[in-house]
Amino acid sequence: MGAEKIDNGLVDVEESVGNGDGNTESYQLSTLSVDHYLPLPAMIPRIIEMCKDLFKQWSELDDSRFSVETVSGGITNQLLKVTVEEENGSNVSITVRLYGPNTDYVINRDRELQAIKYLSAAGFGAKLLGVFKNGMVQSFIHARTLEPSDLRKPELAAEIAKQLNKFHKVYIPGSTEPQLWNDILKCYGKASALQFDDTEKQCIFDSISFTEIHNEILEIKELTSLLNAPVVFSHNDLLSGNLMLNEEEERLYFIDFEYGSYNYRGFDIGNHFNEYAGYDCDYSCYPSKEEQYHFFRHYLQPEEPDEVSQEDLEALYVESNTFMLASHLYWALWALIQARMSPIDFDYLRYFFLRYNEYKKNKETYCSLARSFLAR
Image (tube, rainbow, N blue to C red; front, side):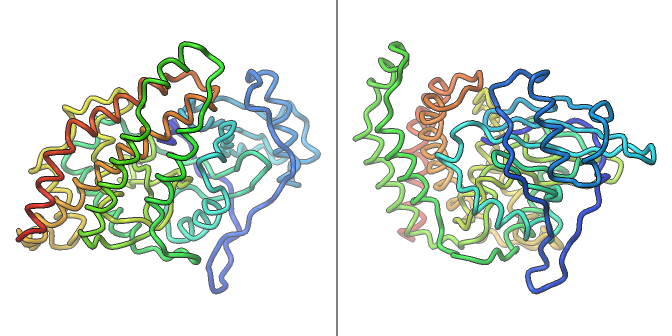
């Protein structure tokens, strides 16, 4: 759900990429922070100060050479485009991503920075240029952000599947243990202990049965463990807002890896399918079996999609749709935490109920399907 919307831009900052064992890029560091709560006019001087601190070649430039505009008001972070007129008269654009307040409550930033270097070296996402106390600076991508309706387009679905196949083959050093259930139970522990200052929100929160949710988590955890799903480095948040397309170059970009971790393949795919519904949670847009099979063919055998066996299609269908249920549980709990912690104007409590109710609506169908598959 860490969705950011980036409009047209240009990758026009050069990065220094190492050629050592990890083939990771170097980036600048700053101890400065930018107050997320400030209105943009008050924020701009801090953004300029931070950029000058990170990039020494800009340190002596007059502030009038910097322009700052908002290009995203996502529901986790805020994205800004900074354009700088350099001494030689050329314009350089970068993207500044401000972490949402308290997002460290659910996001492991060290894990994100570890992953982003290797993913960038493998050709995924924008280049990491700098890190400051509560955000990062990346190259600016010339592309449009996809809409949920784009995900259903057969050609785009095929390309997303092919790119996801490549993404899942990237090796990130460190623990390769799947993080799904650790993350869900961590969210559960934090969500169940929340207290709201707003009386109305607290009343709604008190209506939630956390005992029921915990039992649901344990049931889906046990069932998915029987599927022997491969563990891969997963994006874990592959919604339309984290996919960008340069139509002139016919190049698709995956962006925003803050939820990335080693995880079950079926979770990454099932979670992506849930995102066909968009923020409005229009689950009539959830992909049909035929649409899913189209995706699976291009994921499993990108070069020969028509050669995928019926057996492999059925197995991945069961795997993805069982983990789809876990996706609803995770983002429902995440939404409760955001409802208490985030200053962003979004109805997170409503989002919790939309996700949890969709989970309950689909649970019996896909759990029964998985049990029948396992009983063969």
